[in-house]
Length: 111
Length: 171
Image (cartoon, rainbow over all chains, first blue to last red; front, side, top):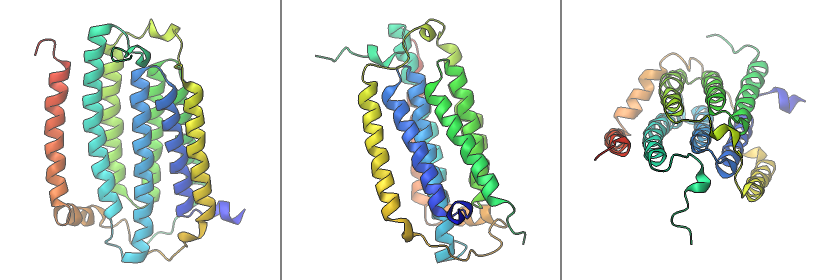
């Protein structure tokens, strides 16, 4: 009970792993392309949480100026924005051609 | 300065909100419901960032992620006609293999966490962590990580051009 009540770095790591698993399940099992893209955003958020938790831990070792994890998290948020924009652009182009948003129907290269 | 108050309660509240939001994202039939659940999860994550003494990252998360990326998602969901899609099957043909793969990944995580539990011991945290967070991030961002900063702005330029080209009717 004491280990559950005192919040340490391991709690944030377990939460980040659970969110990562939810995102992976969403990417692998859904047919709707928009929900697949949102599951990818969930994965990136799990990684961000891990980075910021480790940055908090690193500050206790290296001093109060060691914020490398938070800087990395800002870069990950920037990359997630760029990837979401391009992914949704591809989705719109795909929808304009085939009038559907199921990933099952992206099968022109299937043999 | 101010000692933290009721840390386990807030952690479990925000973690529960994030997990419930994540489960709702991957299981809802309506894409708008999924987007709203993801917005709730992102706001709860901003709260967790505040608990980790990262106010600048929390602000960036709310403004950029919940206020920019999710609004873009909602635009595209409204643009694409989803009425017909809601009546079809929601999970694809290889859902069993997907669940098995995610279960294997979960087993890997559990193995790592139970074996490596003693790697991160509790240490005394320095005080006054939230006082100059933005200034310290800017010292790192414009000093040591200047090259990555420039590359990130180049990446955003490429993404803007790519998104415009992908969504045009006639190139």
